[in-house]
Image 1 (cartoon, rainbow, N blue to C red):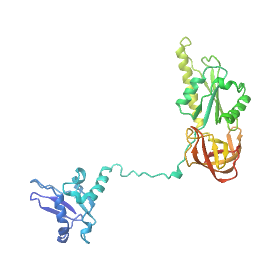
Image 2: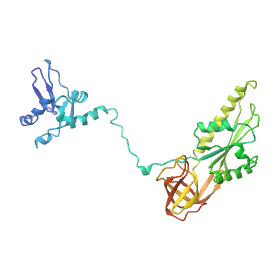
Image 3: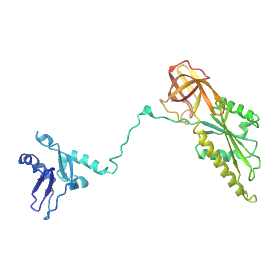
Image 4: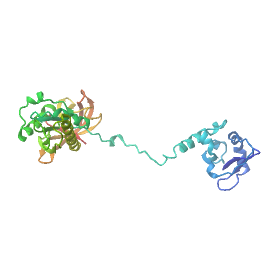
Length: 338
């Protein structure tokens, strides 16, 4: 049905299919439609179907033969319900919403079930330098800028008590020891001459702390610079370290996280990762019976021994949970993401 008004303020009803509405319907709708029509002025216009919108019929319950919807001037929707139009409030709100959201009406937002959400737990990283090349502070800063996992502050003084790391064998052993003592999943060693010059290489080795194995080795060459300009050297070194830090991040994001079970107290099982690492309440973790490092690949967990559900946190980066199924937990077990 189309609604318009002419110069005599008479209401003309035109059926949407071209059929004039019967008098029995006029008797039902005429009173409230007069409330809608604020038709003043002396000009008549051409009626176009695009000038009207369909809304719910507010008088639907007034007659068993009343239609469920009616057509009203589109301007009522665009400018608001006219005075006396509270009768159309329901229909107006529906159509107004459709009009305002016409551009986004085709976009559908699908909710993701909570149990389908996958949370990423960050690896804990320690960066060390072999020798005293002075590159470690700047390298650590580059890693922090890239948000490369959780970078632990481990200076030369702390490193000194662990002994030498001049050979790969020593670095392998040190990586595993640091994991046991501090819980570092990845250990980085930056290797360079004490006074790095153009064309010399800066090397970084990435070790898997869980199994104490070498994962990757990167090398970058220092570009040529004006040796008489101290700032030029700093810029060249910073550029190389930034490039190497980017390579480290690419690897670290691909290394699966595994955590240690550090204590068991009754039903509570404590692990060495919490809020800082990205652990969430209710998160499900698998419990593995130890594991081993596979050469050239990385740490491979052992047999699945159960499942842990996170129930709470301890400090900034610790958590505890309860075993939902599986074997009795051992302190040598590890946990991983489902």
